[in-house]
Image (cartoon, rainbow, N blue to C red; front, top):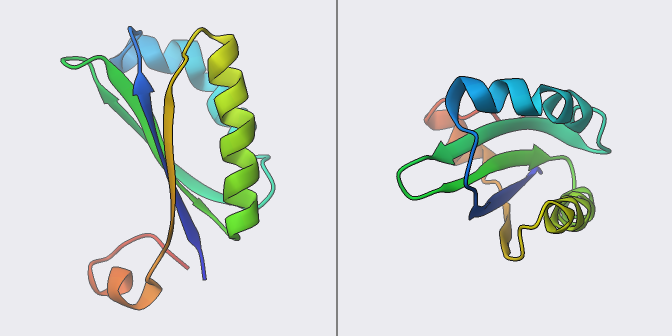
Length: 101
C-alpha cells in the first residue's frame, strides 16, 4: 500500500525553466526523504499556485514530510499550505497506467 500526498500553495514564481533553476537542489534533496517514491511537480502561473503530488511508502512518511515541507514553506513566507494524504488504490491505478507499486 502506498500513500499520495497532495500539496498546493500560493506561489508568485518562478515558474517553468526558471523554477527548474531555482529548485533543482530542493528536488534532489527530496529523493533522500524517508519512504519517498516519486513526485510530480505542479505549477499554474495564471493563478499563482504551485505544489506537487508525492508517493510515499507509508502514511507516517507522508505525514512527516508534509510537516517538514510546511515548515520550510512557512520560512519562505508562504503562510497557508494545503496538504492532503490519500491511500492509493494500486489495483485501479495500474489499470490506468499510474506509477504506483
